[in-house]
Length: 158
Image 1 (tube, rainbow, N blue to C red):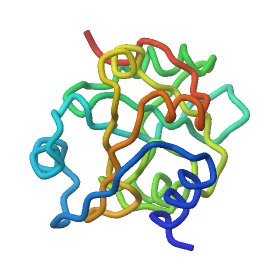
Image 2: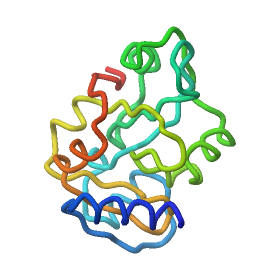
Image 3: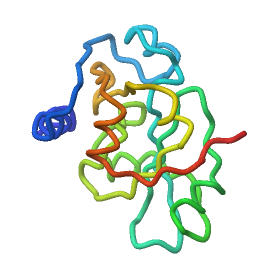
Image 4: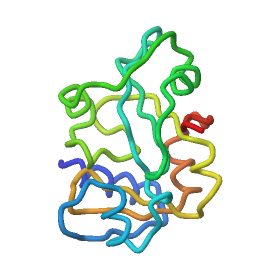
């Protein structure tokens, strides 16, 4: 099953409120938000981060598409000691997705998910590339939190 199919299967099983959007392949937040009809800040940017001192090989950090990650805050939210961005090869291996298509969900590895508090508190719906650069999902933020049960903390740069 492809990552896109896994996401749709999960959302269907969990009876989530969502819609899919087909579009030209795009992984950049600014360009894909225009196609989706959403704001850049509404887009969930998912970053795979290595964090030392935790049981998992990495953490999936999720923040608005217009925000920059603060690695020190991500490490603190994951209760780790030190961290950095995972190399593209590791990120793709852990998520099963190419960079730019990584959804804010764990698909192949049970990665801890840390979501920026400001991101979740701003919109009723979030949007993201759904395991493919040419497919997006727009879904209820409330359903996202219910399904993923992420750690919520301030992880974006000021």
